[in-house]
Image (cartoon, rainbow, N blue to C red):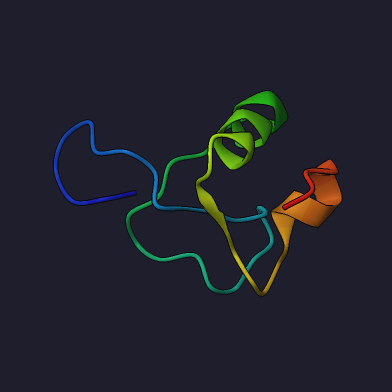
Length: 56
């Protein structure tokens, strides 16, 4: 998540990812898929885009 109240997501991670920072919000699978298809960056370590079948 970006800085500030209501800030947009900056990156999507899988729940198990070690690279998740302190500013995070849990979202469901459908929300993650929507964010990835809208152009939010996928984590290069846990690759949630690959897991959800979202092609670049």
